[in-house]
Length: 430
Ligand SMILES: Cc1ncc(COP(=O)(O)O)c(C=O)c1O
Image (tube, rainbow, N blue to C red; front, side):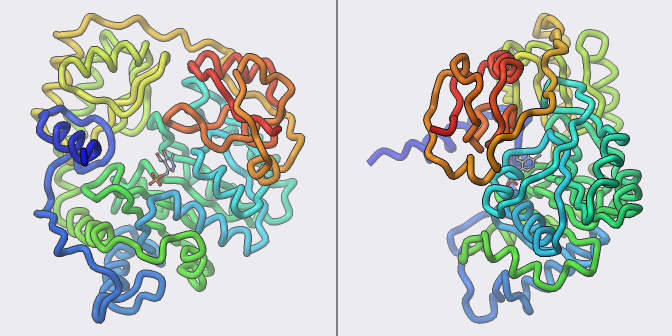
């Protein structure tokens, strides 16, 4: 039998390509991996959802590092943490007010839980993928809600950071709770920039995206003690009953990395990255945000191709931007290689014309999110979808920010955005 996955992985691993994409370990071995380390809940190995032994001890180490009241391990990425946090919020009788530039994992969790979020539309800065919180709108929605839960993504896919501290203060002023999707921000561990230190009640960090952790490893941090009892139970509703010990071990080792190496790696790399930004901003439009998310506003598809020909693989590209995702595991040589490619080898790409129309406007909801997502559906060409009800949780473009959310009526403005992102088909309710 052929082994197409293994063959691809072996070939990519031996290619020597510079990985400017997830996972954060960048292909650099942390320890030798072996099947011998892959076990399940045998005697002495503890049990993730009923932890009182080695897993509990390791989770406590993580909580101490991040300054949380409790930290839970997830072997199902931030996706599982988002399901858990929203389930806790729902059980607490909260109304979820979410910044619209959410990842699809949020939408899927809402479908599973029957949550109908109130949207706050951001002030968009780079197409639909990134924007800043409209604080006036957020306050209006907080005032109108009886028992609010604010849900913010920061850093977003392009690296834009929200002012979590101010948002937390505002949310708490209206007796709300704040959940932060910090999937892209695990590298803020131990700094004041981490959402838990900024006042979030709960947040998730995909350790695997930004730190040396196997794919699927994430932390769910709880900053508000009231949500600790029952949190494991909530997570077990959605998770596999066989969480991977390799992933949990990887989170355990990640704690050691955070404690012993991360501060030095950050100190070493951040000045280099800021120097790189300065140099390349002579020719490229560089998007402001987290230093490890190097986002350039240009024809990303063209630039990704140029970089690929030079052995550099990006995280994401579309017609308007490219995301080159670094992590504290990158070294001086990696940055030099990228700088040489961008400034010496490649002719400068044309700037993107991020048109005003690439902004999501308030949509008309005609069905609940859950009902639409669970209805019979059909896939139709985008240009024929005007007036139909969106049924798809899956968003064709990789950053997975929904242009239309299930239950919303598709309009001509949305169709324009689908087309600008090169999306040709859409799932609609039959
Ligand atoms: C903003 C954001 N949130 C959540 C997720 C889901 O994280 P995970 O892949 O760890 O499940 C992603 C994945 O890319 C993401 O980009």
